[in-house]
Length: 496
Ligand code: NAD
Picture 1 (tube, rainbow, N blue to C red):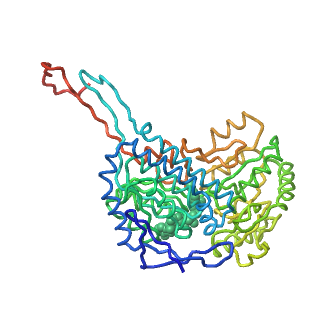
Picture 2 (picture 1 turned 180 degrees about the vertical axis):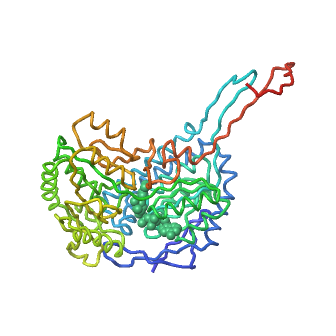
Picture 3 (picture 1 turned 90 degrees about the vertical axis):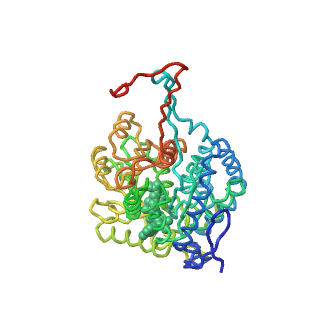
């Protein structure tokens, strides 16, 4: 059986320290294994990044950007292969994988603007014969730790920008989906990136803890679940590193009585069930304002859901694929059962779908639950599966209060035709990414991505302008070149 290894200093490296099975979630069978990097192997990657740093730091931003232009072309040329690797290990349908890859490529396109992004600020004549400017200098070796649900896109939220800013990188992807990320790193070499600038170690906690504790690593970007995000943030910060750690979510939509219900239903289907609900921006809760709105919504959703198909990644007519593991399938089924036991109504039950030819796959069908209460476990926790829950509220304000009281604050959406309500909502909702009639308000690459509350630990959001700030440190230089013959007198007062 093949073993997926690491990519260190421009070479594929094997490490038999520990291995873990990688599943094809559609068949439920082990398809390969992944090497889990030891402390020594992880340190080897850090050392390669450290060695490559001085020369890369001094490479002009324009030359760094040119490599990213070539990398973007290679990503496009090899998109079928990348999407197939994502499908085999994650299970997402090829059109969904292509969408994820495209959003990743957009981050590469943003990184191609490095010379413009790194221009800094300049003030001539800040004082007599004095000029002052701020530079954005790289940090050194930086690390990224990424989740299973976007094997191509989430790493590309991080390394393209970090690298064009002059840093060198060690990426620790999810051990459940190792192959596409490893392949993408090899394309960087083909694009002309010098060895050691980008390194990938597959691994588990041992690799992560090595990155968190090693003094050569100056910053850590993390995306994953909230308990691990909190651990990463506190450990990295305690070890003197800059850290941004993006966590889990529970994204609510409010549907107002004046909303176009048919449109809201279409939007909700994709946002709740796309990628099996395994998106941190998945809309998993609908707050319907008024029983009339709720009844109409539930009826139309139920009808529309009868046409959804769950299945394997290669059949493009499938709407979404399996969840990631057998354990995760059980967890999702458990949340549905607990909501039922707590008195909610299971309107559409996807606990045991029949997928012909794939009886051992980790499939959960689209599920709709009505009359959910805030005290239920299925409401309080992130389910991360194809489950949409409906809560009935009397007013928009009551719905907003529920959203603001929830521990997560990643994304949200208001469906309405009322501009005043939309403005009030976006002004006062305690959530980092807000949609108005846009169900998945994932910011474009030239804005930044991040939630509030326990959906993000740290000050700066991912990619876009905040990404540039995260991957650089500011240095401000004040320089005097007096004209010949001009001498300054002695002064003991503060310079003004
Ligand atoms: P996860 O937290 O289990 O794993 C994320 C990464 O952390 C992986 O690389 C994993 O190897 C590592 N890890 C896991 N346990 C660890 C431990 N004990 N110590 C150190 N490292 C550890 O997350 P996942 O299941 O891969 O991904 C799903 C989660 O990610 C969901 O909660 C989802 O909401 C979240 N997510 C958030 C965003 C966002 O932008 N906020 C985006 C995508 C996914």
